[in-house]
Length: 108
Length: 215
Image (cartoon, rainbow over all chains, first blue to last red; front, side):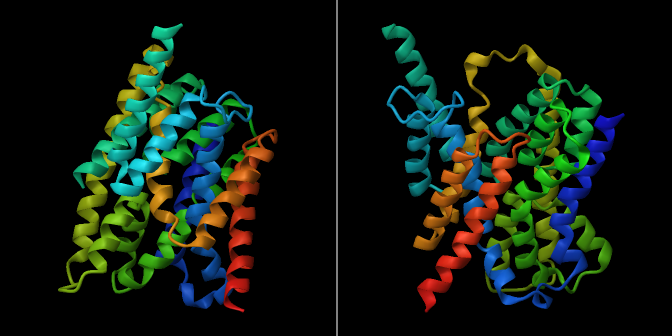
């Protein structure tokens, strides 16, 4: 039962964010600093999600070349700088990770 | 649109697998997806539900990872203000990173504006159908997907694809670095609070730096 309540809560929270300005309030009624802060939301939230995935895959900081997710992630970043869209990043990143995993297994 | 579809299929699949792996029933996993329609919110919710977190904390964490919708909402609002309330509720509910990108691309072009909300609806509905189908496939596959495929990495890659174009200025870059550093330093905090603290810290750093750059 508590799981269903949580699901309902999550639905409400995500809809509130989406509907905020489109449905409920005019963004011009907010102070300028607030609207300015909004522009930093994507780089802040996305970096906070991505960085631990790449740099702490085992729960600990690992910046060595044996951190395959870091190497593959860097390949995906390079691909994203040249080609927009999720496909370039997914293809570059997954291909790199699988190739590295295969190479590590073959060498071991 | 087609590239966006290719990107969301593995992500949706992973979100579906993760829901079942975390102990949600298939019905719960699918309901979560139908109602929240947000990959990262679904993944965060799944983790927190599995950890028996308080409902309010789960909601707060999902709200923080959905803060970018607040920004999209503010930037789309002027273009949708002429529509009636039902249209705005529908388009808000269907708005995602991909449909926002597609519709802003269209809204920034000159030309007839009267029917652009239909374009938005078409893009958003297509994404919705593909997303939900991918999640259902993931829920059905459940824990049978071998971990050695590292499919969860596709989620990280999806966010890399969004992060790179979001960093346009040096201040943006500083914001990303500050948020990344805080997220890792605070990674020991429970309930994914690190994500919340890092997001807020990064945004605050951006506001402070922007003031300095201007003065």
